[in-house]
Length: 594
Image (cartoon, rainbow, N blue to C red; front, side):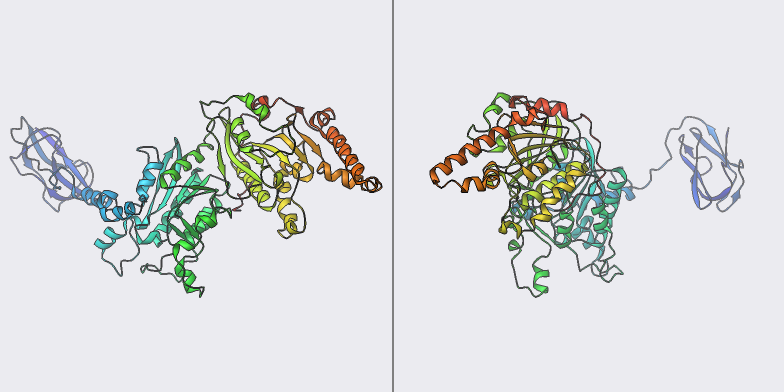
């Protein structure tokens, strides 16, 4: 006979068997309550219940005998399973699973069909495409809008799943990341009370674990319809500050599709890079806010369309649709995940003819960039803005780097205000995330003149010097052709001895300013003294030729103003050797939004 004893002091709240009942091993016999918790006392072995020594309501001491069990073969199990749903799932679990399923695309066919009819994807489709398969763990999936005072819970569950935001952690390219996606099918993707709280949670998590963040920002900004909130204006919401603090600490990627207004646009503008689809519109105020401010009635598509936001520099990478946006977002993040194991190159001898022998002939510097970088590794940012300088993320021998290059096809390569701003911010981006910088120099200098000065170039140009002087990542400079004056110094980060290496191609030429201008300015009196205009022009050409001879790359190298004049085909080798294989992340506190 087995004696079943109390494992603790407690009160008998349930006796599940009677004398003579058959019980299976592990079957519930008695339930004791101790410290407001119920504890099951189970059968130590299969058999038949003997004497029951206690009653319901009785307080028992530890080791007191509760009942006895005579061991034996059980012919019929007496234990009844806990009541469930009929398919083996407990009711409490079934309730959770049903609530979770209610917010999935499979159970929202009308909302999904509307998105697909408009040629767009759902928030969950974008998240699934972005994240490595099976890695997404969702936070706040069971949240609903803070509108219990105006809607039933059943309606909130059906109409406001996840309070309009899909958020969680996942692996992207094998690296842990945070994903936050506004769901435009839920209350127009507006910023509700609980999805604000979800953002706070995710942004704090990203800061604590130093995780990149991808933000799908489609939506209409603040939501006025939340009734369960004791707040006047919710101006104490910390989400914007929390997100802005991530700038410079972790990569921030923003994706805009459809309408992106007000608070959604403010978060988008904090991102390192903004990727936007062809039909997107981005504005700090949507049509309702514009009309409410007495500024007239406008259509959503007229507020910040891509025809405005690409050339003005708001959008870094325009794409056709959300599928391409996700692909580009994954590519962008890949540069911050370390070196690639495999890479290939094209014929480097082609670099020898990349710059025309005619020193005043324009050429496409993008072809030079594509030749120097690993095949297929170039991702250009802000291509439609500041066209005097190209900025791109690239790889060389698998190692991720940032690259800036003057564009001789725009203003002869002169650096204007927008180009300076574009390059300055890009250098900050690289510095913050530990990407070394390759600078391809071909510039006659800063753009000057009365019209240029109207754009506040004194301030904008100086950004290049301030940021260049404070870079913590290494720079390798390659002079393709012109390296004149302050503009060239800015491309070097402040001077030709600032980079880890400054090398020149045989086509390079150096000067304190443009050679023709330097001759005209420096020898004005001598030239004016020549009365014959033909002879004066011939003399000028001779002086320019002499100036060019003095400023050519070989002469500059002979005076050690640059480290070497190289075969263009050897450029990749110089870059790989000059830039250290491991570069620490910079200490810059943030990346300018502009």
